[in-house]
Amino acid sequence: MPEGDTVWRTAQRLRHALAGTVLTRCDLRVPALATTDLGGRRVDGAVSRGKHLLVRVEGGLTLHSHLGMEGSWRVHAAGERRRGGPDHQIRAVLANDRYTAVGYRLPVLELLRTADESTVVGHLGPDLLGPDWNPDEAVRRLLADPGRPVGEALLDQRNLAGIGNVYKAELCFLLRVSPWLPIGRVPSPGRLVVLAKKLLEVNKDRAARITTADSHPDRRLWVYGRAGRPCRRCGGAVRLAGQGRPGQERPTYWCPRCQGEPGS
Image 1: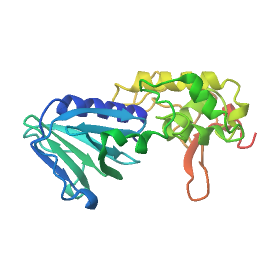
Image 2: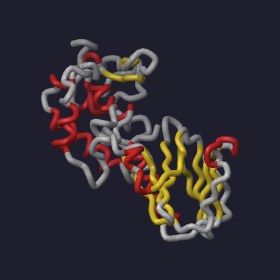
Image 3: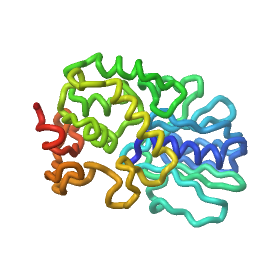
Image 4: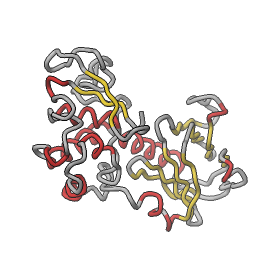
């Protein structure tokens, strides 16, 4: 599941493969860009902003994509067999003489002026892995609505950018708070954002996300994806429930013994 660390790592791969080179092929497979060809233009860079990817191209243009829940960008050496999904899931192909970058299952793919990037990322809060990271501003935004459940507040990219469902569950567990606890009642929101920053930093260069300090495939996470299994801390059963507005609920994992029941 793509979160801020995954998107940051993807931007690094795209920058390594494409930046400073001229595109020899551009194939954008969404209706609005079906006739757009960026071939012959130099790629100036690729950056992440929260869960957004911005590939900047010569001429003041930016190819903006968002990975959503299942999207990905894969980079292959020239002539290497593609991997990442069947051809009908490809939404973008960018290639130079040495590498090919392929975007799969991208729910958002659009071309805009680089000067207008703020129209798609300007609403975001401080980026946990970006140069604009500001923990005090992140805390201020989180506490602007003190009655909001902490799990929902963490997922709101307007507060701080880069937290997804995995980190939401793991952060709440590490702080021993229920995901339903109002953010204004979290004992130390400052510690919350510092811990969020630490988790993304230590995982940004890892292929496998780890929050427990144990790299064994079955012991990497505390509660996420472990519904019905014993809590690693107390032995009680990890539970799963939806959280959020009706129709927009996100699966939420927590240990009632360690973190309390919803509403507690």
